[in-house]
Amino acid sequence: MARQRIAVLGAGPMGLAVAYQLVQDGHQPVIFEAGDRVGGMTASFDFGGLAIERYYHFHCISDHAFLKVLDELGLASKMRWVETKMGFFWRGKVVPWGNPVALLKFPGLSLLAKFRYGLHAFLCTKRTNWRPLDNVEAIGWIRRWVGKEAYEVLWRRLFDFKFYDYKDGLSAAWIWSRIRRIGTSRYSIFREKLGHLEGGSDTLLAALKARIEAGGGEFRLKSAVSRVRMEQGAVRGIEVGDAFEAFDKVVSTVPLPYVSRLMPDLPADVLGKFQAVKNIAVVCVIVKLRQRLTENFWLNVNDDAMDIPGLVEYTNLRPLGQHIVYVPFYMPGEHPKFQEPDQAFLDRVQRYLMAINPRLAASDFIDLRASRYRFAQPICPPGYLDSLPPVALPVKGLWVADTSYYYPEDRGISESIGFGRNMARMAVA
Image (tube, rainbow, N blue to C red):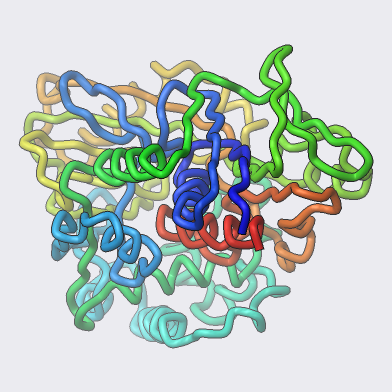
């Protein structure tokens, strides 16, 4: 097959996977990224001398696409698997969570509610066909299985403080995939195992970038594409500012809400589908502490004084010599809370952590930072995938996708890698 010069829009994990597969197949990708570094939501920043991701990431034993590319890049030996714990902050106390014994001992539920919740979680891990859940509404589905009592204690705040006004119109298949991913990370019924890369996501990002460049690929950082130019039903190239550059094909991995602005010449019905996509935003606070908050990696939260459903104590998975906690505030981007200043979120987080662990003093907080991302996660109603345009758009030489397209799977590095590699193969087939 003749070597093709292909523009890849976006240098997040999906865009990198597209470019990586293209060079593997003998083509020349040119990757355009608006930011100053590769990685998207996996990129790191300097947190007071510690290089760490702005948004937390972890890996499960079921992340096959991720593990495969690690092996191809010679990075498999840098994977670390750790037995982790979950907890639940309930009625002012941290209690164990995440296994059958913890469920039986949990103080906030009747025995019947515990049985129904456990049965539902178990059956979710055994389900392999998501299609029967595709057109089912999530909250109704969960309540039918676990009952009102377990829903109120264990699920309601997750929906309230992540999806807000969109909570009553979500796909059960989409929620099921989250339950299943964590459930299948167990290597026994009582023990959970999650993974991290030595050096964090930067290890993978640097290796992918180096391999792409070695294969003839090129990166254009701080180069936001302003338009994909089309003529007579075919792609001609891209514009960056006032400059035009011709390409054989274009593969876009930028968030779908940007597509209508970049590609205004698409058919009206296709543009309408892209414009209809809704996303959840995030303000993620990362905290550096002098002492550990809890012994848990993930801590669920059900407390009337806290507007979060949970937090992640990252260094209980990946030791860094300092104690790092991520506290994500998810909300629709149009919600007034998203407009609040960073300091409002930092103050909340300091107050919440001191309530969770009363031994913490103000002097234990070494540093706090807040990062924002407007398009952190798509909102997936029932039948979501059928509402999206096809990846191969009705314009010759143009493919478009973002994390929405591996529905019902949750956004993740492994899913982005697998989908991106497949999209690259489609583009040159």
